[in-house]
Picture 1 (cartoon, rainbow, N blue to C red):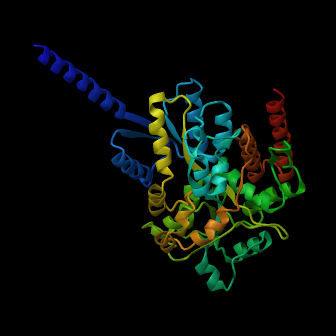
Picture 2: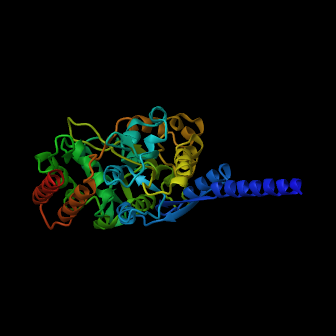
Picture 3: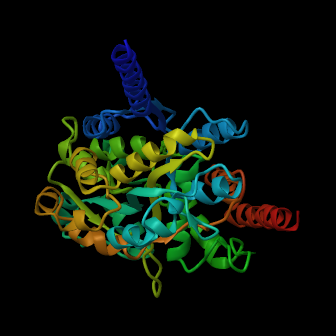
Amino acid sequence: MKKLSLFLLVAFVLTLFSMGAAFAKDITLTFLIGPDSTGIFHKEVALFEKKNPGIKIKLVEGPHSTNDRYQMFVTASMSKKSPYDIVWADIIWIPPLAQKGWLLPISDYVDVNKLYAENFKATVDGSIWDGKIYRVPAMSDAGLIYYRKDILEKAGVKPPRTFKEFFQVAQKLQDPKNGLWGFVYQGKQYEGLVCFYLEWLWGNGGYYYDPVTRKVGVDSPQAIEATQMLVDTIHKYKITPPDVLSFQEEESRMFFESGKAVFLRNWPYVWVLSQSDEMSKVKGKVGVMPEFYAEGQHPYATQGGWGVAISKFIEKDKVDAAIKFALFMNSYEAQKLAFMVNGWDVARRDIYYDPEVLKKNPFFKELRVILENTRWRPATPIWPKLSDIMSRYLTKAMTQQMTPEEANKKMAEEARKAVAEFWNK
């Protein structure tokens, strides 16, 4: 009888242990991302779940707009009980979200030195707020110029470098009456327009906001001239269709891939798609180069980049699983998959030396140099507000509701007010 009781007790304990072990492994993490149009996130999640059978990742596909997804996470976090355990976070989200206390400090759980050793410095730097890292980088980004090398070669024209050369070449080579425009970019009133404009602003010797000195300089002659050039693409030189005011990344990419533009400003992901999409009319005809700049200045690329951040309000028993997934997204295997499927300019340096990667995209040899020398948007908790101010007044200038000078002066006025209100509260 005692033996039977002992047996039942042991069996009961083992049952509880196995149930507990099963429960501990039965973890589901919700992951807020953008539209997974190419299926890359589903592929990476499937690979992760195969390696970690006790962890499930539930993808939540938000809207395409970066601004809208940011607002989704902000709205959810305000209740201090976010429905999103992890989020695909833009580099500019980190200061405002971390300053609010809505992100988990990842540097408390990972080897920071290893992150720096394996990734481009700017992608890690952009994940820092107040001395701590709040995001594991997965994708680096930098604004680039794509051009129709077949059209330039036929005309005997070299790729332009300066703004002056660019406007001359774009005007010369375009043929709007037959559906060929000189230049397209992200012209809608949103973060993409800001990223593009900053490249021309910096390349013209100007700046918007310095988070160290807290000074705003967007009403300088260099800044006003940069806005004037933006307006001139539509209204003076007429190298850009008015429809650009509704273009985000995908609209401008598809316009270029349809053979309707000589030059395109976009991100590195465009290369692979332009060469692999069935509908692309520019396969084998595309060249890539850094941004344009003023004489005596240098080209600048806006540092973009995405990675995995973790909500501060995640349940404690999910933290280890979330860290494991974040590090997986930065692994060689996941990063190479992201390149092969999406053409992403990933965060890890070693991918840019991979023979298979270089065979598919020879430009990655030059891109790794560009990514070591990018410039990122001002690291400040009020960047969303400063960005909104900039995009609103750029749109007013581009639609000729204001002159470039009027727009930039109002932009500077509101930016200075926002900075003063934040730091004096």
